[in-house]
Amino acid sequence: MKREKSEALFEKAKSYFPGGVNSPVRAFRSVGGTPLFIEKGKGAHIWDADGNEFIDYCGSWGPLILGHANDKVVDAIKKAVEKGSSFGAPTALENDLAELILKNNKYIQKLRFVSSGTEAVMSAIRLARGYTKRNKILKFEGCYHGHSDSLLVKAGSGLVTFGNTSSAGVPEGVVNDTIVVSLNNEQAVKQAFAEFRDQIACVIIEPIPANNGLLLQRKEYLQFLRDICTENKTLLIFDEVINGFRVGFDGAAGYYNIQPDIITYGKIIGGGLPVGMYGSSVEIMSCISPEGPVYQAGTLSGNPVAMAAGIAQLTECLKPNFYQDLETKTQFLIDSIFSNLKSLQTSDS
Image 1 (cartoon, rainbow, N blue to C red):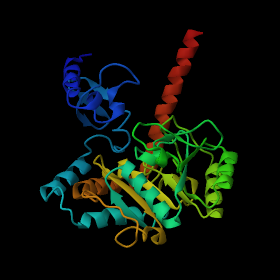
Image 2 (cartoon, rainbow, N blue to C red; image 1 turned 90 degrees about the horizontal axis):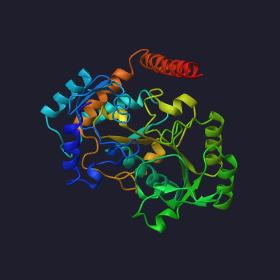
Image 3 (tube, rainbow, N blue to C red; image 1 turned 90 degrees about the vertical axis):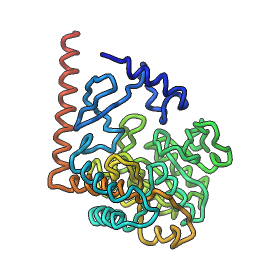
């Protein structure tokens, strides 16, 4: 395999960017070697700067549910950008994408577009605090919610602890309002609510955690979280930035038939362009500025090119049997992997 061009590009990048990359996972430190510099992609395939062709199982870490350079998404982007890439003012495309989502997702009534999943979660946390007038949040070890300060926290040593920062630059005062407990531990959650009664604004969880491996949660456990939050007037946030629009159009909330108070989304709704979104009930969303006192803004929020790409992609996701076909393809891949592993084990023995 040729690597010369990628290696040369990485050497040059190291003089421009910390570690030579603009996001840490691109540095290849977990897998070793030099990062591949990608030149193009189409469908399930990508090509690097040296001309090597690969089957891409990452899909840009989630957004490309239709594969690379999908013709309908590309056409929508071209038509939108020819009219202008950004206005800092409302466009009809924002209405169109919002209507498409809200008509097909009964778990949210109003939404707000932002520019990333991290921004969506950060805004949802602020909304929960503003709505409940409480400061503390509860998160789970093993779930990742972006790189905002209050969520860059890992568990301490006890059953229920204030977390320890997992990044330099996060003030202790911020960490002290974040409670971290282990996943799938009902007793720990009960203890947290007992110790911090009437102080917890929200519980946030990836309903299908995917950053430390696929840590599937029991429906009974997610329902337990729903019930204990309701009992304590605490908001339940489902972070569906990764699994939203992937396990189904209405995500894990629909898959498990559990109603969170706030849901965050990202990745797939932008068709490969930067976008995020959070949604809730009309009552809770009315707290967002300019309607309410919780401030949140963004120059590129609802960007017309990203909205056009999202409309094109989600329209495809709504076609009959889209998710059934996706499940069939996934099952074929899984069965093939296990079959090959079984063959290898048989030959070794």
